[in-house]
Length: 331
Image (cartoon, rainbow, N blue to C red; front, top):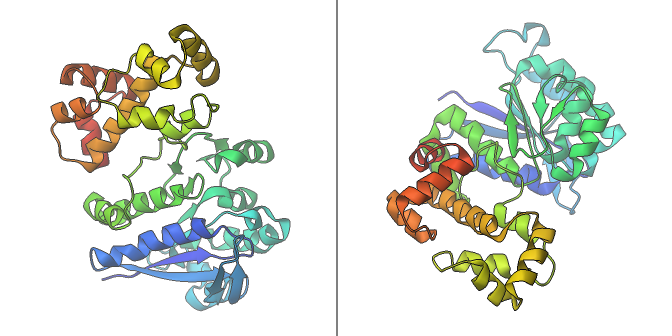
């Protein structure tokens, strides 16, 4: 089997999860099939690099040694003469440090034609941006750094709420765990959906997420907006999706009058209680469609819909595709 060399870029103050998540995804292919992947670690120099949290990783080879030993760059255009199959660039404070960028970006511009694909995780996008490789492309990064990326690199079409953006040769992903989502997509591109799904199950990934899904989960979006009066409401609703979740029942749970509850709820969350409940039901339905083989009517019942027709209408209205189509696309 032809080996695919996956390079992981190291620098001081990298984010450990940005690197370990994709590493474990590619490595875990070994647990479901004969893996074509060989993982190596690359740094400005061979030797140790320390993450933001104190994790030490050893670079197997330096940037220049890799280029000199593995490839005559004058022949980089030859399809079988590639330096790396894939380069993974993690984020972290180091990815935004001028000294790190000054060391990596010239090398990255030089070897770019000899790498089949390059993927960044989190703020690793800043290294790609500084190198100029994202100019004119759509890209994303961690939600906390989206504005900074757009401000400092106006040539990039920054996508603020995407989990990952795959342009083919170059891909970028949002914060931290989205690097696993992107890695699963790259594995799917290489080996097919079935292998990627098996890897996801081995990693105990909740369910494989598409690149165009929001960076926040639906429950977390609501929990991040609420004060102590509503702090436990989302958890309670998720545990009682099959119950009557009218305004009356929600207000009773929060110990408020219906009128007072409705007013404060809309002020804080920016939408009505009915839409809030429907969003949670549909988010859970989306999860069940990917993880379970249940028929549609059973999923509709588990999510609290009175009929499968009502569920289908709500699902199409929210996601612009039927439940069965969603299942076929993301399983």
